[in-house]
Image 1 (cartoon, rainbow, N blue to C red):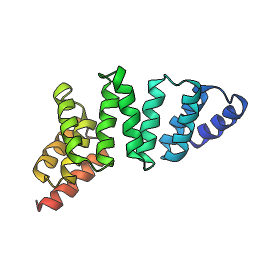
Image 2 (cartoon, rainbow, N blue to C red; image 1 turned 60 degrees about the vertical axis):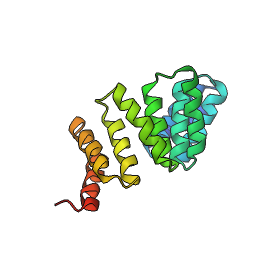
Image 3 (tube, helix red, strand yellow; image 1 turned 135 degrees about the vertical axis):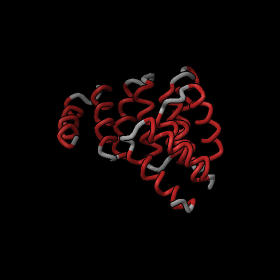
Length: 171
């Protein structure tokens, strides 16, 4: 993604009003975990295409991951006002609740989502993290086990599950 960033920065200089270029640059920065730069690129994209919910979702995610969960929550809610069924935004909203320390809101929100889509590993993972942060290790274990069953390649779920076993004193 380093090469992508370099080319997209060049493109943004040549096409400064092109929302697609800025959005792609935001995506590339996100892939590199350069969340503040992603946030700035998405903000530029939204200047030129303010109704683009895909970009707004990326912007909200970058806000949360760069340390501003309340602003991310605001962006996700803005999308959900007119697209309440957007599952990816709903999952991101749950993650933003976790990042803001509102674990009970995250648990309530993610539990409702899982009732709608019970086979989403990411939602189970986030719910497991919310339970773990709430010191409900039994529920955390259940959700994290479900996440790794649904997606065995989800490394962070394996890691969190291992830590949950340690915290719970399991062999």
